[in-house]
Every structure is written in C-alpha cells, then in structure tokens.
Amino acid sequence: MDQLNDIEKAALDALASVVTEEALQAWKTAQLGRSSPLMQVFAGLGKLSKEERPAVGSAANRVKVAIEAALAARETEIKAAALAKSLEEDALDVTLPGRTVNVGRLHPSTQQLRRVLDILKEMGFQVYTSREVETDEMNFQMLNFPLHHPARDMQDSFYVESEGRGDNPILMRTHTSPGQIRAMREYAATNPQNPPPIRIALPGMCFRYEQITSRSEMQFNQVEGLAVGEGITFADLKGTLSDFARRMFGQNARTRFRADHFPFTEPSAEMDVECFVCGGKGCSVCKRSGWLEILGCGMVHPVVLQNGGYDPKRYSGFAWGMGPERQLMLRYKIDDIRYFWGNDVRFLEQF
Ligand code: DAH
Image (cartoon, rainbow, N blue to C red; front, side, top):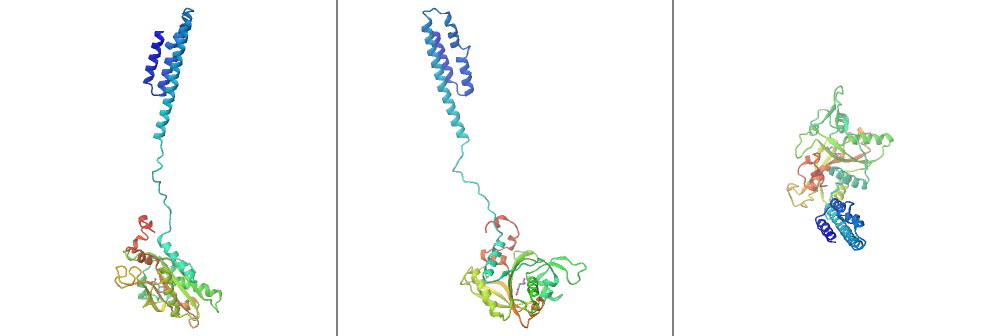
C-alpha cells in the first residue's frame, strides 16, 4: 500500500513539469505503460494472498483512476495553451490601415483637351482629327506662309523626310491649322459647286524644334476651331469665343481682343481673358496686367478659303488656335511646362 502511495505521488510530481504534448505522451508511457510501476503492481496481484488481494487491487485501481484523471486534465490544459499561443501568433490586426490601391487616371492634358472639346461640342462644333505628320505644303504653303517667308521662323520644324521632295518636305505639324485645309477640301469635295458650311474643332499634338525651357516644349496640344459659311463676320468670332471663355472660365469671365498677325487670317487678333487668379486686379500669373492671353484667332484669309475649295467671294469664316497645356498652367499656376511630358507621377497624380 505504501508503494502505491509512492507511485501516485511520484507520477503527480513528475506531471508538474510536463508542458508539451510530446512530454505528456512520454509521461503517460512511463506511468501507465505495460512496464510502469503501477502496471507491475497489477501484474503482481496474483502473487498476493486471497485476503490481501481485494484491498491492494482496489487501491491500485484508485491510483490508476487518479493518474488517468490527472492525465486528462493536463491534456486539456496543454491543448488550450497551444490554441491560445497559435491564435496570438497568427493574429490579424484588423485595425491596421489597408494597402492603398492606385487608381489610374487620364493625363491632365487629356483631361483639359476633353473639357475644351465638351464645351465646343455643346456649342455645335464637330470634332475633326487630322494627321500629325504633314507636308510643308499643308503645314505652311496652303496657309499662306510662302516659301522662305520669315513668318516660318516662329515655327521651326522637325523634318521627317526631305530627300527628293524639293520644296515640299515631310514634317511633324507645327500647329493644328493644316487640318483646316484638309477639312475644307473634304467638305468641299462632297459638293464642289455648293460646298456645305463647316463648324469643327481640331484637337491634337503639335511639334516644334524648340529649345526646351520652362516656357516652351517641343510638343504640346492645340485645339483649332474653324467656322466657314455664308455671311460669317468678325462679330460671330467675338461672340463665339467670348461665349467659350465664359463656359470655360466662368460666367463672369470678361474677354478682350488685341490686333495681331497670322499669315492665314485677316484681320487677326489675340484674345485675352480677365485673369481668373486675381479677378483682374493684377498678380504674378497675369504679370500685373489683369489679363491672360488664351488664343490666336482671325477671319480666315481669302487665299486659305480658296486653297480649301471655298470661293472667298461667297464664303467667309473665322478660326482660332489655343493650347490646353497653357490653360492648365494658368489655371493651376504651374510654372514649368516641362512637367507635362516629364512623366513624373508626383506631378501627374495631382490631377
Ligand atoms: N496656328 C497658330 C499657332 O500655332 C494659332 C492660330 C492663330 C490658329 C490664329 C488659328 C488662328 O486658327 O486663326 O501659333
């Protein structure tokens, strides 16, 4: 009986230091396995006398039940501890901020191009896209820039091909104006005796062989406008472009026209809009003048109408050209045009 008490005590003492499942298995084998001291007692019961046997047998059973109960209790504890540990280690912190998803967006120039075209479409202009690679004839000669004329110096060109092409090399268009000739010819071809009226907007990229500085780039967008019909006057030009300015810059936007010169318009003008940064009071954006130059315009030159297939005795028209990047620079006070094609996402992301 003493031996059984010792077995129980030793088993429970040993269990106190068991903390892993592997150690518990080893402890179980040592305490309840076939060669364990307790099982030796059961095995030796047969050698006891009939009188001793029931008391020792029931005592041994009590010890076995106690050891098994201790085993079950410790097993539960170890499993609970393992679960708690894994929950803690694999925990998701649902309060952490999520990863930002970068959403793509349109280039600011494209956005502004679309704003301009949306307004012009509302005003009844149709979008006409013309080619970026042009001939000297279309880009200059048909627009009343004679060969070797000094006005060409304003628009130095990138030449694509000049070998064997004499006075008509191929170049990257320096402005969207050659689209005027192409559009007029296409419209006139539908009815050469009675060409139909035209009201179009010509958007697109232009290229100039320029020294790149904060103020000039070798590529930029333009939106050209052209209206041709019978009885169109300078009043139509002023009304249309002032209305455009109000739709683009706000209903209170005031405009003014200053005389200028372009070979393909006569008379020619530049349109200013009252500075929308300072409201006309004078600031750094408008260089204290209160006005911002927005576009060049004029009545289509008779020679240009003729080149397009429209009889200048019967038809007249007006045209203009403006730059979306320039409008953005004024609107957002961007002081360097190189940001537009520099592909720096820190700039592009802001629009
Ligand atoms: N093509 C001119 C330029 O790039 C802009 C321009 C001025 C276009 C007057 C026009 C116009 O249609 O009438 O500098």
